[in-house]
Length: 462
Ligand code: 5AD
Ligand code: SF4
Image 1: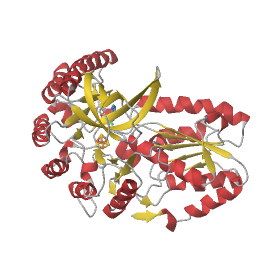
Image 2: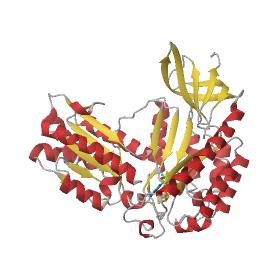
Image 3: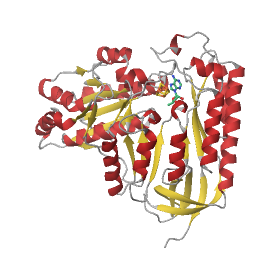
Image 4: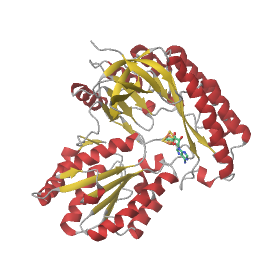
């Protein structure tokens, strides 16, 4: 169900905390692990905290409330969050009033939720993703009666609109269009921790995008675990066209897509609205072996994947493609891995994000036999990265001597020179000397290609 936080008691809790905090300067520190969805969620967390009277700070040492927004996609992400959490034990000893909240995907895993409650006595509350609107209630509870809270298994699949947000950047914005995932890829924890797919209403999304464009945002990235299966009153291609019809000089990106839902209708819309819809597509492959794809429950074959890649390249000349690959899924043989390498060679991705398989408790793959030895995984990773360095470089070289439209994201003063960084429409990182403002589109002549970035000279403006 779509709900508005204004129709709930969230505002009452916000007012209560604000009243308690009144007159004192209280600081809030938010730490984010994981994907862009989490980055976007942290903007909501910071929005709620700000409304409760907290001042955001980058310095955890002076914080009165610390919230860790966790990721569970691989064990490494959890270990990092837990070790960081450990650092706050001493701070809590020094300041017993410190509030420490653990939210996000790790807090939605039964064994982790249990552990946080029993073994981490300095944790004030835990909360699953999709439930962030309850943060004010949990803070209020702690401030009024000192109670710790552990919210688990209460996600009813509602979407909450009208949450406040403190957006990290002024020129780029993430817009969530759907939450959760129904695909149950056998290695993946996401459907368990983020629940089933639910899509926001298109009017709410378009209204939000229009507001962002009005406020000067130049790049909107539509977010969802699987944006192509957006399914509300419009389909994803229809939603994309509606957003592309918004007047203004801005670009649209989206992620992540699943090959099974990447339709010709979507490719048509991209073609029609290029370059307003950026000529870039992130399409996770995961494996190039049909046998492994089946074990992964990915529901497409390598042949189908190659067809989609071909269709994208034919219809959108110059499109950049990137992908995710998992190395060392249970039973992955040398021949299976060779199939993955073969797809990488055929498609010639601009960028590949490769991950070592990490068993996730509760998923089907975690119960499979045939674990691949760590040394074998490492050797495959090294081979893949070596190949991809070369392929990425080959993709970047033809940019030399071309003029690219670049959105300026940041700048640094180096040896007295102002060096800007930004991205081409195809998502390539470019460094160039310029007095361009952050958020300004600038034409850059590319002078040098490296495997993972380009160097260029800004064209004179006006
Ligand atoms: N182990 C390793 N990588 C994983 N991913 C998802 N689950 C796992 C796992 N258990 C990768 C996939 C996905 C990306 C976001 O993370 O490649 O596309
Ligand atoms: Fe995980 Fe697969 Fe859903 Fe992506 S599509 S979030 S990999 S289950």
